[in-house]
Amino acid sequence: ICIFILTDTFNFNNILTIQQDISSFSYVHFAVENISIFDQNSSDHPNIIEGQGSIGIEIIEQVPAVDAIIVPCGGGSLLCGIAISIKHLKPDTEIYGVETDKNCSMVESLRKNERIKMNISSTIADEIAVPMVGVNTFYNIKGLVDKMIVVKEDWVARAIMHIVKEEKLVVEGAGSVTIAAIMAGLFPNLKGKKVVCVISGGNINTTILARALERGMAAEGRLVKFKVTVSDRPGANSQLLKLIANGGYNLVRQFRDNSWIEGDTYTIETKLVCETRNLKHALELKRIIERAYPGSVFETEPFNDKRTCPCYVKKLCS
Ligand SMILES: Cc1ncc(COP(=O)(O)O)c(C=O)c1O
Image (tube, rainbow, N blue to C red; front, side, top):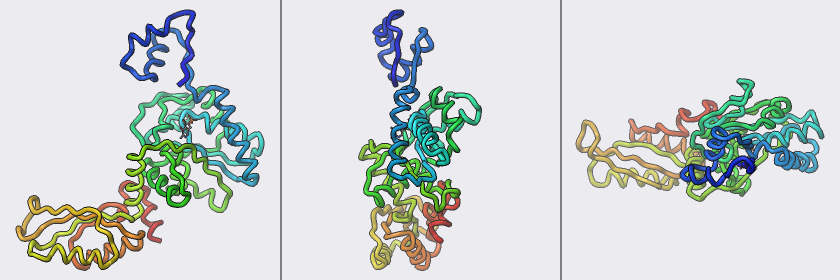
């Protein structure tokens, strides 16, 4: 946030003293609401937008035949700058902006045709989570960008994993929303076209990265969670584990529960998480376990699409 203060009319130090316990963002709002002060989101400064526009020039230099460019959108400067330079240099290039469903202030503003203020939810794409888009960015994007796309947050973790795996790049949530939107099947119109996805940052902490990778693995069937009821007699569990090992699966976690099961006290409910090689291997695991233990439950991804786009499982299985 850039804070522009009319230092002649008041002393900013007073504000700092009064509001010591609030964030810099709140400082700005406090100042704007209580004193006549001009505040400008850094995303909205013409110099910033101009700088971001140079990315558009680089894209045209490196991929002159580009058909479409997909750009993450927060306050909008990145998208706005690229849209301005691209529509000047190669106007027939399609420009798309991407936000997540957790924070889509640009999409909502465009829908209402005015800049609206939104509450920010915690998100893996935190760097593009802004409560209100800029004035300059809003009006330029409105006139230049072909379409704004909203991707479900869930796809972002998957995109982070995909980029690590395929491109050997560590990318933060905000930086990977463009790939996430493609993976989610939100750009069927771009099939066969030359598309540039802007991957805009790598500031992700190791905890979130690890979580995103696990999340991505679960979604792609590389991690499978299921529930089986086995007999409590000696050897029953090792039989189950042997079945898993013989299939080439790696047991990651097991939780054995004999306290909360209903009915037969000589059975144990056990929850397992296994690593598989791929979705095909995961489907095979489901078949093996269901054959040996009728009544076993595979209720999480990739075997249902509750948390994702319904086309996902279908797409993976086809
Ligand atoms: C990783 C990342 N991607 C994209 C953006 C684009 O944000 P904006 O739309 O505000 O220019 C930012 C801005 O900070 C960012 O940090």
